[in-house]
Length: 149
Image 1 (tube, rainbow, N blue to C red):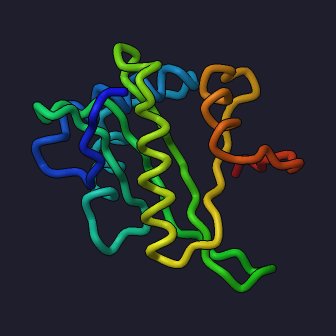
Image 2: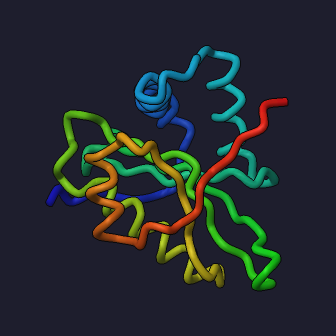
Image 3: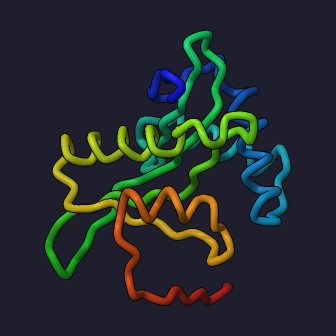
């Protein structure tokens, strides 16, 4: 397992993050441009915005994985949970437990913040990621709907 540093973003991470985020968008076949990327980068660096990030860095400082997440109220339990919006690992480092380390670090952060759980979605055909997720969490019975506005 590659020894990584899991931490919040710093200004010097932007180019590495942008490369990874472009890869994430391409994987999900979503359009990505500088306007969207700059907005998201601004969000994860704005302490007043609810979107946050953890990055996986090599000991030399290269960002090789990202996790975008946010706190989310869970009304039925009167609690706050974490929602993992985006998780992406540089293809060069897949199989080295980068995603595992990012999710584990997020879980520890969630415990410190009093979250009762962390929830996320993935594509049904994202088999490699689902293999990691199946080792870390339980798959729920919920079906996701989307209403475009």
